[in-house]
Amino acid sequence: MTDVLVTGAAIWVIAAVSAYAQSVSGFGFAMLGIPLMIPVLGAPSSVVVATVLGLLLTIGSTVAERAHVQWRPVLALSGAAVLGIPIGLAVLVLLDPRWLTLFIGVVVIAATVLLARRTEWHLAGTGSIAGAGLVSGTLLSSTGMNGPPVVAIFQSRGIPPREFRASLQAAFAIQDLLAIVGFVIVARLDLTTAALAVSAIPALWAGWWAGDRTFRRLHQSAFRWVVLGMLLLSGILAIVQAIVQIAGGAGVA
Image 1 (cartoon, one colour):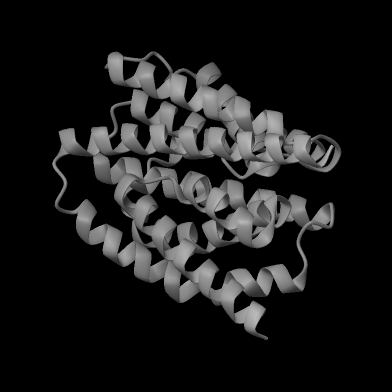
Image 2 (spheres, one colour; image 1 turned 180 degrees about the horizontal axis):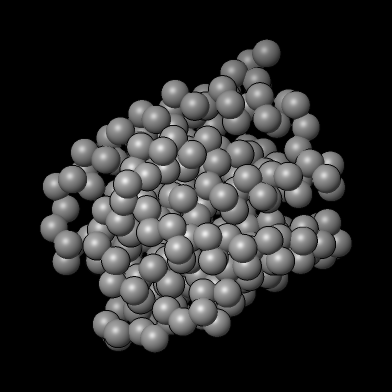
């Protein structure tokens, strides 16, 4: 009983902190939450729980901010993600995710550096949006970390902060729902895991509420650097997570 309470409390704290980060920057819930959940739940369950929590968070925020969502790119990204999610599920089920996670971290950090040095990106075309959707869907269902491609697309379009955040939440909500359907199909989501995620709803909304108060006080230029900082942090966390997993595997071998 004590272990269950400790696990539940840990998930509540992680959910609140990750929701705060997503409320401030528009993304980062899974990128922060999954590395923190792994010591508590293990990697596979962490991906699933974070995705369920992400859906619960982004559905509410999407409904609340629906007037600010730019639906055209959101739906284009989500349509392409449908093709990527089965690829990611195959990776999750069949392949060792440690090297993929390391690669994700490197790509995220590289993307952050490029975004910081170049203010104009030509990623708004149909091909770029489709590619970002495909990659984000693949990353979501394999690692739970689908943010960087979606963030790069919206960042390149110069979307104002409120529309940027609202559009990200809508894209994440649709992709999370699709990924959860995939988790059910491959038997990665059970009632115990779902109940653990649902129990943390109050923590989710407490974190979002606190982050929203911070978001409303941010200047637009400060907002851009918050986004870049979150990308850098998520990349570092992914690399640290992968190195720990790889070292642990080598130690066992």
